[in-house]
Image (cartoon, rainbow, N blue to C red; front, side, top):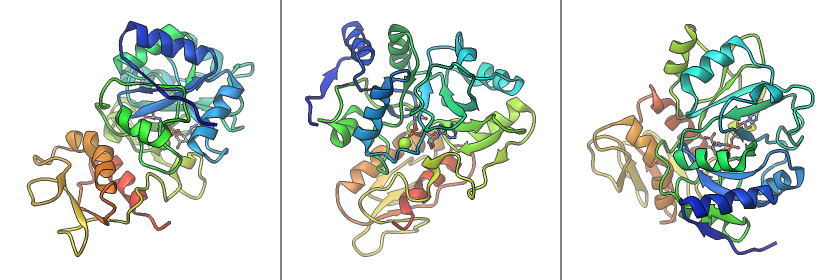
Length: 313
Ligand code: TXA
Ligand code: MG
């Protein structure tokens, strides 16, 4: 069903309107430090269902629940020592924890897609925090892009993918991190890296004092990890030294190219530019070649997203 998508300002009036729309069961996209999220009241099954509908998302894909703080978190999940260590080290921030659900949690079953765990995150972005405080409840929010497409890091990306399908977007400029949150599973015996993201693996391992287990692809507990994801319309070729034929080149470090993720080879800058630049190159409707990106720190998450963008589909 088509509807008018309102663009809200990141001021007190815009935030109250966004919170009121969420309370009425509508969908509101809002910025977080990682990417724009497509928010709905996580306790309202109809509102959560509308997220899947707007994104055209396979219904087995569970969503991340966003909280203002950890005050009532233990009404939703079983807390643990590892959860306490990671939450106090990195929240608010770009880390998502998957924890066992508690009986009587009150979240819509659609949020977890029927799993007995839920993904939780306390975001750091000032606007997101104000919105969560004013709404006063858990907000389910996947990245605000149509399923299988590049994540949105500006309100313009949200509108180009979901305009006419959601009630509103709060426009507070580009997202500073530009990559989705890192997801750590705490439901098993050992903390497991389920998705590389905006918080480097090394930082998490330093806080825990031991290495993370790495999720084994055979058992997909984070379906966002399906191989072909984050895909631009055009084909993508990785580790390219130069553009061939009709290709446009996405560079890294000092080099000749069409767009450069970071001329100074700064991985933080590259992460923040990644999705915006893929959107820009995708709009040219030519094949995309991408220069090699080092595989440490945020480079791991950047390479993960690029490999998914390049996967055969
Ligand atoms: O940075 C982010 O994480 C952004 C912002 C908006 O917070 N959100 C985001 O959501 O990237 P989404 O839905 O695009 O990705 C969520 C990922 C998916 O891969 C999903 O399968 C996984 O989290 N996930 C959610 N609940 C899970 C669970 N209970 N167990 C394992 N994986 C889960
Ligand atoms: Mg996503």
